[in-house]
Length: 176
Image (cartoon, rainbow, N blue to C red; front, side):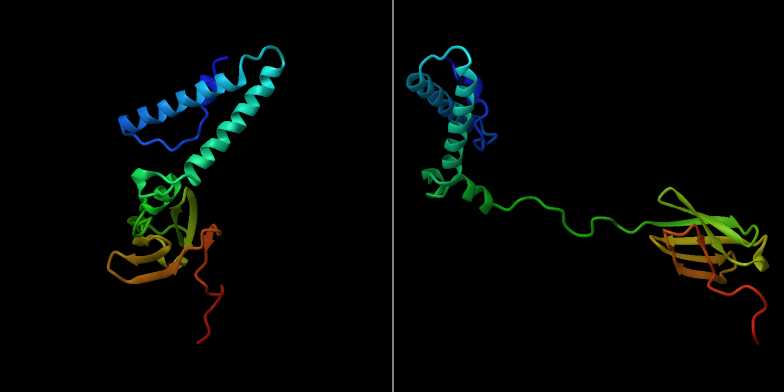
């Protein structure tokens, strides 16, 4: 019985180097020959059980090869120890830079709209500013609303869970 199809499952860490790949496949071929020699030819239903047994044998070999057996070329370290000792690539710095934007709008019905994460939010400014041309300055969730003359109308943190961003003032006349 040829065991090449089962030997392909051997989980040995392979380098991208052609020489290392060739050495690894020579090891696979040696295992295949050993399995053929010691197990002989099996027929019928026992072949499925044999394939499972072969896979368990190959998994055990791969575990010993990668985690137990020291390697001369690696300074007597196992391949697993050598792999874990090397630095691996990882992201550095801020993963997401802040999102800045400026939006021009005109106040309508005492509010303006701003889209954040594909969701429309209404920002209350008061009916006293109806028809005013404004600029909305956005830095992530920090929002400033100013008139084109530079007067600050709102400065707040956008609450993404709310559609309407209230001014924080109670309706009605203001106490003097």
